[in-house]
Picture 1 (cartoon, helix red, strand yellow):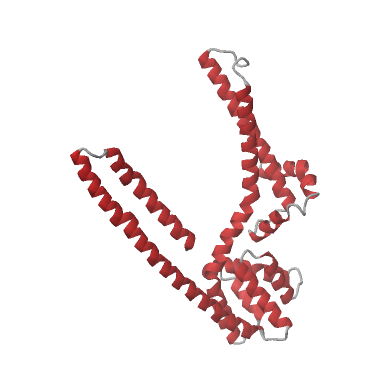
Picture 2 (cartoon, helix red, strand yellow; picture 1 turned 90 degrees about the vertical axis):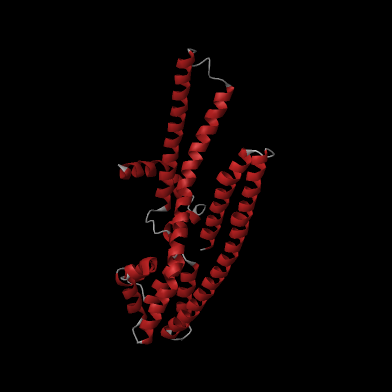
Length: 293
């Protein structure tokens, strides 16, 4: 069913988006980085098609609601339909169309961002594996071929290495060209820098194995520095949390309780502190820590 819908959407909108490939080049780039193997024209055609369906559904729901209200109020449908309804209908269909379309538009970017995080989380360890293999004399292509089959250990980094094997063994590219291709479409800037460094080292006459060993040392040192900064930041957040959401609110709650007992304060204020301010503050700290990790 989905395939049929995609074909219908592409037949309707494919030419329109095909003539605007340059304008939507970022969508194509994000689709490749997210490993969503759908042509840009077909993806945006599907987005436009589902956006129109969203408009129809929104219009139908509003008209159904108006009919039900007119029946309940025992008034004519047309007589109850005024200028405000026209404005609401136009606003509703606009929101429905653009919300659905931009959900499709930005989904590849979000997926690429997720893949970037997964790649960079394990990249230093994968580079360590690459350097250890290079130190015992394994040729670079064989290293990446072995890495591509170690998804259980290196996750998205292994998946990122699979196009190198495909380009060499199926498409007939040489290893350096395969590295360049990967550097072009990878979702991770760190992975791109690593690939470009390997290509530059080879073309300048250097040893790729030595580059891998030096890169492993550099990335692991960067990883240790990042963890050190993160631990320092957690210490700062912990102090702020204790002062701002433990000691401070506890003192306020005690004072407010006494004031409520004496009749000079409201229980609503105390309830707001306990049930709204403290939970929202804790949620905010969790969100900030999650953004930094």
